[in-house]
Image 1 (tube, helix red, strand yellow):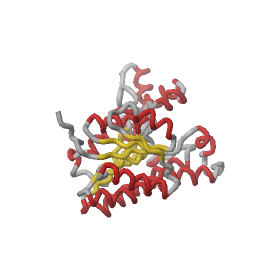
Image 2: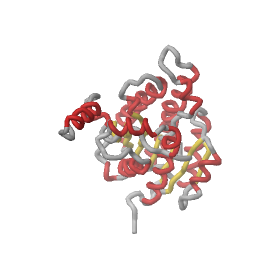
Image 3: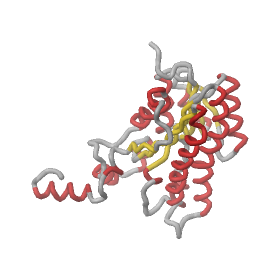
Image 4: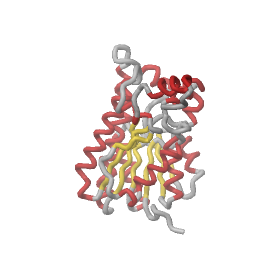
Length: 271
């Protein structure tokens, strides 16, 4: 049975785990040849080994030559690039401990967030788009975040970088749409990636869930489903969009969860 992404070649950055790995698996199920790219060569090779026909590449998104080489090598080996999922982001424990409020923010953490989350996505797009145009078009999907559209007490650099990514998405969509290159951005909420499951206390998960309009928190596969849709011709009339995929967190008033508790205590159940 044919898939909706048959004969297409996809590059997924940050593919060593979480959303990137889930997206690679879903695109492969839909028929795409998937190239998993990550700075962690050993980890990304391990994921690629679990996906039929997948190939792993080590890439440093802060190094322009590394990015250019990836795009060139993929095109030489597979003949085309049809899909780019700019998913990689720097958010490890060391980075998070330095990415604080503006006054206490480590400038090096700011620079790193911008280098990976925005400059890296720009470089990937810069070197992939010409190959997409040569092949008749393509789809670029960026992983942004709710931190890019809402303020927070910490993660200043991460949030600012994701806001910049949302605007980069619009620029790419505007500049290359007539050449059949689409660009869309997912504004992702809290997702139960392996890292989030391990590092987020249950009490925090409960607080986050209280602000969701869905009965459960998101899974990496939920994001992968949207990636597959945006990668396919089913979404051919969608470009330049910033699509919330957050269980409805950004769809309601900030007081929603508190009022739910109040009305529940009053016996009316819900708002």
